[in-house]
Structure formats: C-alpha cells, structure tokens
Amino acid sequence: MENSSPATVLTCTQCGGELHPDEGQIFLTCPYCSATVYVDKSKVVFHWFLAPTLSDDQARGELARWMAGNQTVKDLDKKSRLAGQSFQYFPVWYIKYRQQDREIIALEPAAATSVTELRSLNLPAGDLRKYDGSVDAQSTPPSVPLDAAQAWLKERSGNVEVLETSLVHVPLFTFKYIYQNAPYTAVVEAGTGKVLANIYPAKAEAPYLLAAGVTASVYLCLALFPLIGRGIAGTAGAITGVLLMLGLGVLAAPFLLALAAWVASKV
Image (cartoon, rainbow, N blue to C red; front, side):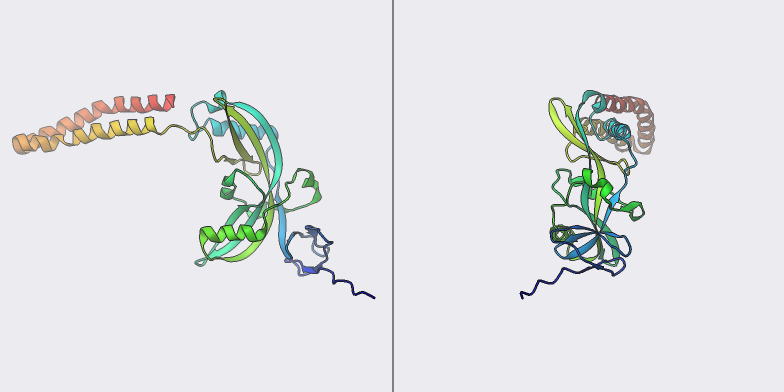
C-alpha cells in the first residue's frame, strides 16, 4: 500500500494549538482560541481587519474637506467632478520590527496598488478585529508574498529584526475625480478618515515664493538704512536710519500682508 503524504501541521502563534489547513487554504480560524490567521508559504501570521467608522456620505465629506484644504488648488472641491466611487477591504502587511533598540511598525501593501501612501497609515493595534467571513465579499485577496514585503522593508530600513507580522484588511473608499479634463484618484481610509493621494492638483509654489521673496527683499533693504546712515553721518545717521527702518517697516507691513492674502485667495 502506498504511503500517503503527511498532513500539513501549523502552529497557532497565539495559543500554540495545531492547525491543519486543507491544500490551498490560506485563511484559517484556530479551533482552540478562535484567532484568525493567514497562511503564506508554511508561515502563520495573524489576520485582522479594521472596522470602518465612516459611511459613504461621511467619506465624501472627508474628501471634500481635503479638497478644500491647503494642499490642493483653490476650490478643487467645487471645480472637480466625481467620476466614480468604490469600497473595499484592502490587504496590507503589518510588520513590527526592532531597530536600534526601538520597536517600529511598518506597513507594506499586500496587493497591487498605485496609492503607495498606504504606508503612512496609522493602525492602532487596539482597533483591529479578528478577520471573519462577513467581509469576504468586499475583500481584496493578498497577492504580494510576505517575503517580498519584508525584502522591501529591509531595502528601506536596512537589516532589521522582525518581531511580529500580521495581515490586515483596511477599509478604503476609492474616489475617481476629474479636474481640468485630467483623471485623479484619492483614497479615504474609512477607519480614521485620512485621505491618501500620490498625485493630485497641488497648489502652485511660485506665487508664494514670489510673495516671500518680495517681503524678504523689502525688509533686507530697510535693514541697510542704519548702516548707510552710519556711513554718512556717524552715530546720528545710524539713529536716523533705525528710525526710518522702523517707520517704513510699519508702513510696508499692511501692503505685504495684503499681497500675501491676495496670493492665497487666487492660488
């Protein structure tokens, strides 16, 4: 009689109980402690999801506030057109590692995405819940192996000691919008309301730099008055120069503030 191949036996990282996944099975629930785990190449890591706290309307409200903020062009919320909206639980690798006696949390996308800003999310451990089948229909399956994610981390941070790894499905509202006939994408993380976008219509820096340059030039010229006065008439000239500098500086301030306010209103 032929010998059958031994069954795959894995150990739950929470309670130490034996897990027996079927061939090809990647999501398991420990029968002893009910921890939900993800199996990746004979490794077991915890599998969590972050529960959303925002509704569709609230997510659109967070997007509108971001569009009306200081990062984007003026009136982006009014001048852009929403072209599409979707919701998904997106997988990320949650990696805790030690570097120079510090414990650090890093996030790496566990599936293909154009929004690399996902790495900047803050996922408090206390807000994570055990993954269950209720979110399967809206979940994107992981396609990036854990080994690849850890390799990316080491490329950026050097040789690190990985302490703990989890797979977390994060609730994301993805918005497609059009501005000046160009398509853009923004993501609202539905657990915290944070808006993420790699490319967006940002405020132009040149007008602000010009206003700052004009202000700096005006006060630099005024600062030379005491030196010029001292060179012309000694101490008395220096005193006169200081008085002129202060007086003209006070007179110039409202005009320079008005220039800054005008730039802010137009850009």
